[in-house]
Length: 276
Image (tube, rainbow, N blue to C red; front, side):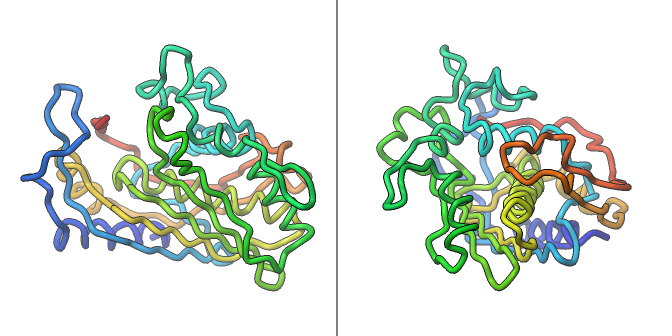
């Protein structure tokens, strides 16, 4: 069993057994047939992953690592909101007539701000501080910009990263306001654990702890039988994770520079309905 499997099983069982069902509430999300998409949820789940011990990728269901890494590079490296610049079609449902998702996600990371040291966008500020101000307690990003929410086709779910250097180790905290546990949980964990490893490598640091804080961790009503079935599956050991060691500039990373050796996992095995 991978550690990510263990955490996921514990989280989902806790949600199913002890969670709050919003069946009687008026909810925003809808299934494609127009039916309200209700959930069972737990408030504030916090998971810690030690990247020195094992990379947190689950084996209960195979995580599509190529599309997963492509998306995180689309957001953090390209700082894009154009779905034409993304390799997969996962954002198609939120694309506007202009082919963008509005002023969301990558757009926010690419906005430049003035600092004492000059102008930086949020990504470049993090990279600068990791090299020049590693003792800083202000190395963080936030894309939940209230001034632009009305121009976002989807409010950011994973909205804030805080980085902290402890000795030679780079640690990080991902704050997430909302998490669809079946569709996106390990997807986001793999993305931001990889991002932390990338930032560590180009900053001359070693990946340490990755902490994932979820304010509203939920399972949709139509996902409940799928989750229950998945929790009973065979589990495998986590694969060996590595990055191309020749990369020293964050903007040079490509999908193929992220390597998972001997990744053995169960196929999805079912179609996952998506609530929008």
